[in-house]
Amino acid sequence: MANTVVFGSQWGDEGKGKIVDMLAEDAKAIVRFQGGNNAGHTLVVDGEECILHLIPSGILHPGKQCLIGNGVVLDPFVFCEELDKLAARGIDVSSSRMMISKKTHIIMPYHRLMDAAREAAKSADGKIGTTGRGIGPCYEDKMNRCGIRAGDFANPELLKDKIAKALEEKNVLFTNLYGAEAVDPEAIYNDVLPVAERLVPYLGDVSSAIQDAAGSVLFEGAQGTHLDIDHGTYPFVTSSNTVTANAASGSGSSPRDLERIIAIVKAYTTRVGSGPFPTEQLNEEGDYLQSQGHEFGATTGRKRRCGWLDLVVLRESARLNGPTELAITKLDVLSGLKEIKLCVAYEYNGEQIAYPPQEQNGMAYVTPVYETMPGWDEDITGARSWDELPENAVNYLRRVEEISGVKIGIVSVGPDRAQTF
Image 1 (tube, rainbow, N blue to C red):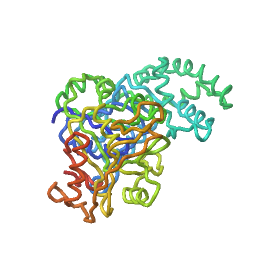
Image 2 (cartoon, helix red, strand yellow):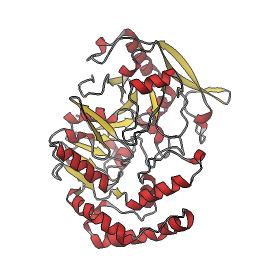
Image 3 (cartoon, rainbow, N blue to C red):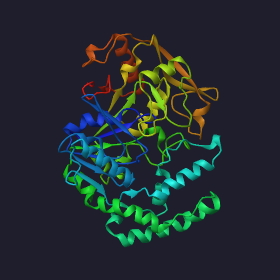
Image 4 (cartoon, rainbow, N blue to C red):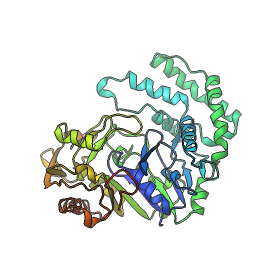
């Protein structure tokens, strides 16, 4: 297979894990290039569900090399929990097939404490809906050049020193700003050391591993384009760059290595947490999508907000990421709706616009412009080709292609690996 990037085109939860799992069969290596355990990929194979937060989805394919790139922020406790759960299922999670970049930044216990303290201190209308996993504070330390990197785990004295230095400033914030207790550096070190020692065998040069698997690497992103720290609905965004360009910098490879770029598009739109959502449906249609789609966050368990497919959002994702094809997921959830709406433009400040406004929170003040298409009643979960879809479902997909300007290459009609063509 060609080197392939899989990215989310909406606000995450598009079904990237399933598509990565499907494509992994033909890849030599699968690399996760950004985000942390604030993301969750749900896979269903032969009716059995598996949720992964850090380990690449390709782990379910025997013999595939799974890599965690430098752009990821890794919680070592969560990583070890995932190792244990997978091993209990008989899956090989040895260091012979799994590698963590020595440059990967580590989420420390004090990052989670800082995340919780900050969110608790905000007023209700100021909360951004963080998962509280310590993702943002860890990325802050990375940019502030005081972060703990995975390679530090191999040097206990360096690790101990860096923890103490990192907490000098943080303890001032904990005690003076948030009214919390100071964090003991020695306690943190003693807490982290056992998992640090366990992770040392997994440390390696991910760039070299990607180079060795050249031409057969699958780059797995987390979250979605409109949660990107630069291009998303700021400030209601994640703390990393989720766009395709970060697949190179977040893994240690060249942009020229990115050949096939697949935009994962849920057949409708969902969002978890706060932030503008123009096509959200707080009505029977929204409840139908939520119920039929089993829309609960894989990481937090929170109920997802649901609405019609937003092609303005998709159009923006196409120009930011340059997809070579679309993968439409959860098309089966739309079955049973008499009418289906597509948002094709926005009304904003008296004008009709084709792309999201660039001002902060501008999307909170747009009015969706909809096209209405006839739905279908047929159960499509058994479809295994384009020709087996109802005419109205085909027309819906063709309209998505037409407005987005990108061809559809993959269609998913159910949660199982086999329900994809």
